[in-house]
Image (tube, rainbow over all chains, first blue to last red; front, side, top):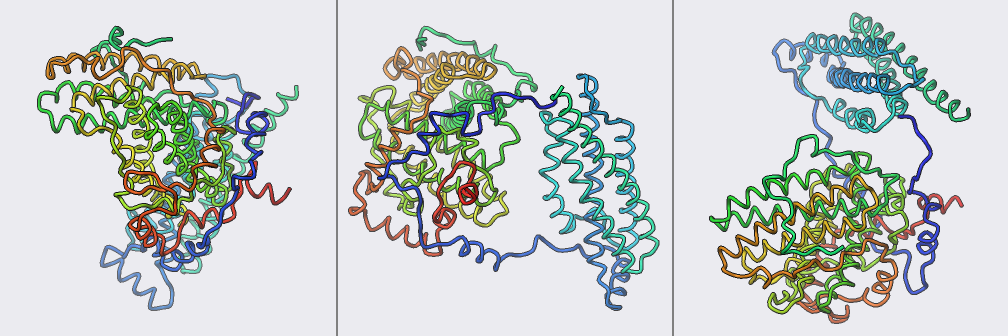
Length: 245
Length: 387
């Protein structure tokens, strides 16, 4: 499924006659418009009147409520931590599914085509399992804080929207392994940075045990990132060399 | 190629079957397929959607027709699925919107030229200049919000220029109604034309109503809300040109014949062989539906379907760039407005539409805002600025 030259029709050069006609507009036809409303009028109104995506869920248990109240009294805001934990949980849970999609694509490609893109399936499966472990670990962390791991926090929602285009690329049967790896690289880069932040946040909150668990996860994510980056680089450069040859 | 409506019995209904896999065919390529393949796919989705809408309503008013309607409607539903799933997932909703407006411009322009009734042709040209402006506004949105060039979708077939400004298209409901054609004297092609354009506009209205709220950008949300309102006006206009005295079965006959006519038009112009095979298959399906509805018409109305339909399909819709016609219309008719069922110069517009529009625009106009001083340039306006 590597990319080849073909009749891509999107550019001006593919329509030599029509493109000239399109650019030659008679003087009696206006090419631009104006009006009384500026973009800022619309944007400012909605920016000034916007409500947030939603709220961080209240602890659902008495024990959880007590824990949160205690922290708030000492000047710390566990809701910020819960928001980010919820985000990470959702991201890792999606990560399991995304790796499953990538595995299916890579298995199909290696079965169907003689390709030089070397993505070891067993490594992808290992990464998939680690994403699932991270999800489990984060579920336990949220429960430990008395928070509900089944709730969707605002940052989980926003980060899900942010990742949706990348996930779409990987899920599309028409995209190549290298296109999917590029999307995966973006996902892993964001994931990596997010784990680093979560470690700092756990330390700030005095949750050293959690910080230690997050460091272990980050170490695994570092491996995901370096491998995905390497496979992606390799997949593109191999194609370029094959084309040159 | 000639298609005779009463001799061609088409595929019998009991042989019109689908597997679930068939419902999700390989999509067309956004990059490599001809833009007119996408135009045909979008229009045919609209044609099937309108047939489905009509058949559901028909079933709610006609006890005796419920069974054949349910049987044919199931097939039509699956036809629509197979057609609409030809659109690839790499089209963003806004890119698909550019495709929808290309349909509205190119198909309406082709139909305006093949329409023998001057009043109806005028109605199509009137709507055409408004959809033409929507293209310009959405192209500005695509450029300024997503940083993309609408011409990647249009492939130079369709101009990106201002038309009748969207902000002045808002009219009072009474100024959107037109005189209906008279079923007894109008040419059969006029009945087909009205249904085709109505179907295209109705699906556009519904599409904008569905995807508008999925945008995060406030200008995009506002622009979709505004243009959906105009599409609702267009549905009112095109729905009102159809003779309300046609019987339910008469209408059903016209729907089936028009579906056949549209698949035939697609078939003769399609460049993608994989999609062409679908048009051919569905032309035969529609002829099968028509054959069945002809029998129902004879049974329940004791009339000959030839009273309603031509014996052969008219010349196909021309799927080609209508740039010259559109620009001529733009030069001559941009200042037309509607007053009641008549088209008048903007100086003669009635007070109702002016008052309606003034109130609607009183909090600002998204369509003006998005396209302020916008001028399309190959590769987006950033390419012009850097050149």
